[in-house]
Image (cartoon, rainbow, N blue to C red; front, side, top):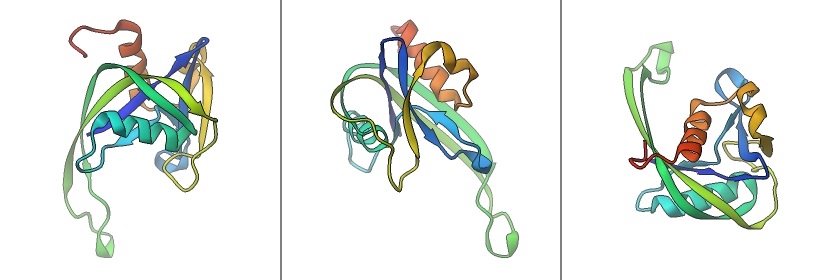
Amino acid sequence: MAAYAICVRDGQVLLARSPGPGGVPEWVLPGGGTEHGEDPHDTVVREAEEETGYRVEPTALLGVDSHRVTRPSRVGPGGLLRRTVDHHGVRLVYEVRITGGALHPEVGGSTDLAAWQDLTAVPGLTRVPLVDAGLRLWRERPPTGR
């Protein structure tokens, strides 16, 4: 379970940059995993501040993005694959507004940069699919949340 923020203002969306697989940087929505016992509403507030420096307030739950992928687990001793992992991620996407703080990169975390990106430039960015899914939820605001 994870919670992510969509923050759009003046034709720009707030994104964070992650090292990505193979070290190729990719843009992501600010957000991440919910701690045990943590409300997802609190997760998105915490994660957005950690990754962007901004304090945010969720203004709407836009929807849910469910993602499933089967992949090999990490390499074990002797270079042998341990097993296949069936990963299912449930990601809540919140619209947020900035209430304070200042833009700065996360230090020692999962991202290394936070920046405002023009909405028209997003299709040309190297990004994770959740960026597009989140922006679709923001634009369409589907009544069913998906």
